[in-house]
Length: 194
Length: 173
Image 1: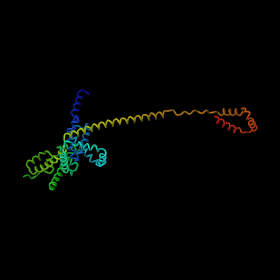
Image 2: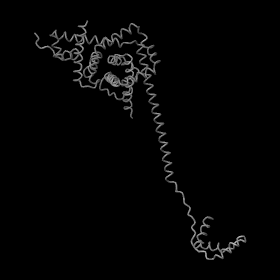
Image 3: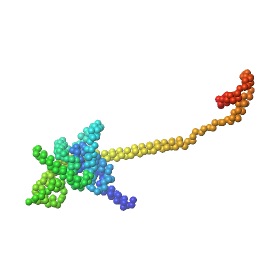
Image 4: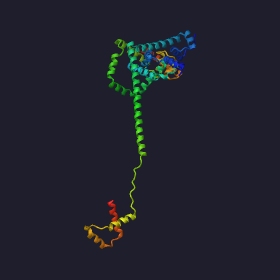
C-alpha cells in the first residue's frame, strides 16, 4: 500500500460515523430509544431493544455504505428488531419466565438506577403521556404506525421512511395517509366522548 | 369561489410535510383546506409532544444507558473471541483425532500379515523308514514277551500296523 492509499484509508476510517462509537451512541441513542418506545410503549423493552440496536449496528457497521443518512440506517435496524420481537411473541412467555428466574437482582438494580434524576411525579407524567400517545396509535396497523411515527415524530421524508421500513415510497405514502385518516377518526370519536 | 378542494390524500400529504406546488398554492387561497391541514398538524404535533416527553430522560440516565451499551458490546466481543478460541480448539482436537485415526488405520493396513511357519512335511519314504526302524529295533527285556507275541502273530496286516505307528509318531510329535 502506497502513502496515498494509506492516507485515504486512514481518512475514510476517521470520516466513518463509527470512528468514535461512544460518540455515535451518545448522538443517536435518544432518537433510537424514542422510535422504539413509540412502537412498543414499554420503557424497559425500549431500553433493551435500543441496546440491541447499537450492538447490531456495531456488528454490522461495515455494511453501512453511506447511501442514506446514518439515522435512517439505525431506524431500519431498530424497526427490524421491533418486528422480530413481536414476531417471536410465542417465545415471550418462556423468555419472561427465564428472565424472572434469572435476573431478579438485575431488575432490582434497574429499578434502583432508573433515571435517578427524575422525580416520581415526572415518572408518573411520562407514563401517562406515553399511555395517551399509545392509545392514539394502538388501533393502527404496524406499517401505518411505523410510517406515522417516523414521519410525525422523527420528521423523516417519505423516501427516508421507505428506506428505513424497506417498503416502496408509494406504499409508505399510502400507509401514512391511512394512518392519518384513522388518527382523525380516533380524534373525532374521542372528542364526541368527552 | 373555490370549487375543487384538495383530496384527502393531498391534505394528509401536506400535513405530513410534503411540498407540492399545486397544494401549496391552493392552501394559500382556501381557508377550508388550510383548516383541515392545520387540524392534522395539530394532532400530529400533540402525538409528537407526548412521545418526546415520555421518552425524555436525564443526562445521568442517558449516560447509564450509553455505558450499558458499551459494556454489552465489549461482552459480545469477548464472547465472540472466546467462541472463536473454543471453535479453534474443537477443530484442532478433531484434526488431531482424525490424524491419530488415519495413522492407526494406515498402520493396521500396512502391517505384514502374520507369518505362517511352514510345517515340516515328512515324506512317505522317510516315514516308512522310521516305522521300519522302530519295528526292527530291539525291545527292552521287560517287553520281551510282547515281542515274542508279535513274532507269533506275524500275520498282522502291514497296513494297520503302519497306521498305528503313524498315529504314535504324530502324537509323539
